[in-house]
Structure formats: C-alpha cells, structure tokens
Image 1: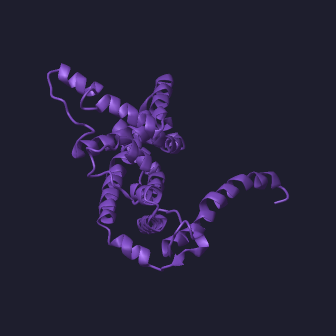
Image 2: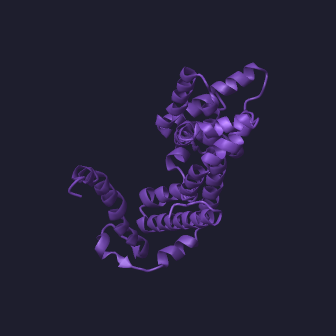
Image 3: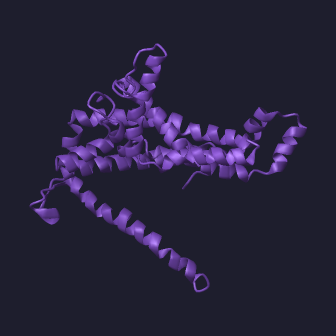
Amino acid sequence: MRRDWQLYFLLIIPLALVLVFKYAPMFGLTLAFKDYKIAKGFWGSEWVGLEVFKDLFSKPEFYRAIRNTLLLNILDLLFSFTAPIVLALLINEIKGVLFKRINQTLLYLPHFLSWVIIGAIAYQLLAEGNGMVNNAIVQLGGERTPFLQEDTNWLISYLLIGVWQSMGWGTIIYLAAMSGINPELYEAAVVDGAGRWRKVWNVTLPSIRMTIVTLLILSLGNVMGGSFERIIALANKATTEFTTTIPVLVFRWGLESGNFSRATAIGLFQAVIGMVLVLLADRVAKKLGEDGLI
C-alpha cells in the first residue's frame, strides 16, 4: 500500500459513491416491515412485520406487474441481448476502417439520447394520426397502423425501439473481446478451407463465449426490473395492457400514492428475485464448464 498509495487514494471517490448510494440506502429497506407514516417519522412508525407483504401479495396489480415485467424483460433479453452480438460480428467483418468507424459512431449515438427524447421521436414517427411513417404508408396506398396506440403493436414497437437504442452501445464489449482473438486462429482456419461463415462460427463465437456468458448472467439480474423511463416515455392511455410493471408500481405506490412501505416491499421483492436469478445463472454456467462470476 505504501508503494501504490496513489492508486488506493483514487479508489476513495468510487468507494464513497458505492457506500453512500448503494449500501447506506439499504437501511431504508426496513420500511417494508413498518406501517410508515410521514408524520410519525422513520423511528416512530409502527413495526408490522410481514403485514405489508401480505397486503402486497393480495393486490391483483402486483401479479399483473410481475407478468408484464417478466414478459417485457424476457422478450427484451431475446432481442436486445442477441442484437449486439450479431451487430458486433457484422462490424468485425467490415474491412474498410473509415466505413467501420462511421458505422460504429452512428450506432452508438442512440445510447446517449434520453428516453424522453426517444419517446418524442417515436411519437413523431409512429403516431397514428400524423406520424411520418403512417403518412408515408398512406401515400403508398396503405392504411394507417396504430403502432403506439394498440397493445400488441405497442409491444412490438417497444421491443424494436429498445433494440435500436441499445444494440450499438452493446457491441463495444464484444468488439473489444474480438480484438483480443489471436489472428493465427483465423489463418489456421483459412488453411483448413474455412470460409467467412465458418470462421465466425468456429473461431469468433467460441473465443467470445465467456464474455457472452458473463453478460448474460448480469442481464438475468434485471429480468424482474426493467426500464421505468422507457415505459413511461412510450406509454399512453390507449395502451395499458403491458405498461404496468414493477418499476411503474413502485413509482405509483411510492411517489404518487405516498404508500412508501408497500413501494419499498415490492422493490425489496424485486431485488431478492434478481439476486436469486443471478446466483442460479452463475451456478448453471459453472455446471456447463464456464468460469461464472462468483
């Protein structure tokens, strides 16, 4: 520590951020076991044990939120997780350096847009009444489609917009992993008569398998979570079938209704399930011969 004290000193800020914003708030989880009243304060509120969870599990909205959360996040995992892998494989095969850099830059840009902006763009493009896409469809002789005003169409639009927003940024880690592949492996594959597809399947994918497994395990921890901003930015009164998720319920019960105990309980339930999923995924990965995370 005496030799590398500068490096340890630099760790103080990130460690302080983790302690203040990750560990310190855990003390507030006790609200899930109290009948919290703002007037009585944190210490004066009555301890009720598991009564808040019993009330939570009796709410039909809770089970609807679990269903929608699992549906949206599992579909998101299928499309938004695999799209960066496919895109990274395609970019890796591009030989022109300038063309490759331009494409990477354009694909990264959506990640830096807030969901408020993305939601506004989506409604400008996909609105049924005056959206640019529907106007173009009408000009071509078709009929207007309620992309964001009908539940099934909203679900498809939600997934596609999510893929567009995240796939460019998601390629960074995969491209970094591909850059570390030994070129001699590709040369040996060429000598053996392998074409471009065979090199991707037999060299590139096996070489980045550990990266894929690691990111998949981390992604499984968010299956019971999801993006609150994304749903709020794309939601509207005409589409209510899939927009009630766990993060949305936390917002409604906590900030809108002032029922902080119930909101804390559902947040704690979500976090515990997410942790269990990560541990199970890590165990399965180790059973399959991977290193896992823990």
